[in-house]
Image 1 (cartoon, rainbow, N blue to C red):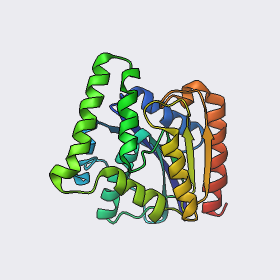
Image 2 (cartoon, rainbow, N blue to C red; image 1 turned 45 degrees about the vertical axis):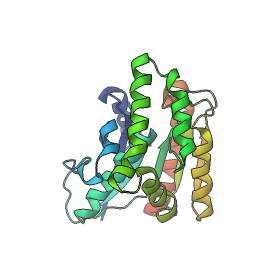
Image 3 (cartoon, rainbow, N blue to C red; image 1 turned 135 degrees about the vertical axis):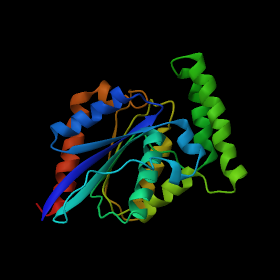
Length: 238
């Protein structure tokens, strides 16, 4: 049986295609095919069945095993992967996940996570970005109450760090991030480890939100490549 490995590059919220595609190019250099999922604020304000509903994987024959490596950038990336995986399950499409990568993510399901982003909004590039982010924070906090639903961050936390705790995970983050606190990322690391997960982590210390690759590309690529070689190769029995 042949193996087709696909990196699912899940961009951060409202990121344009070009900077997200750079991660797909990185994975191509590492020997992986890729699929790119872009994220918008609206993805958090509608049912997961409506997010990435038309995105599909390239068809493969029955003798090919499909392995997906989600590379999630910020909360938008986490939301995209969660919803995309919901569609894969609904279609009963065979696949496996040998490893997961979290870049500048995730939130923990606590009010303090939203408060941290609220306080960090003035550091966004423009005044409009700040206003838009804070308006989104209000909508995000209201949505579960108005729809009588479980908030997206609790759903993602339960799946990624409890149900899927056994999947090896790499966390790339920064103590200088003003959008998602290193405290939240390290809480996720602890949660995964407490449930028996294999976890690797790197704090870039000074890089801004979703800017670790640009800040120190050599270190980023080396850590990512080593993680994938170790865990994906082991998973495949190579």
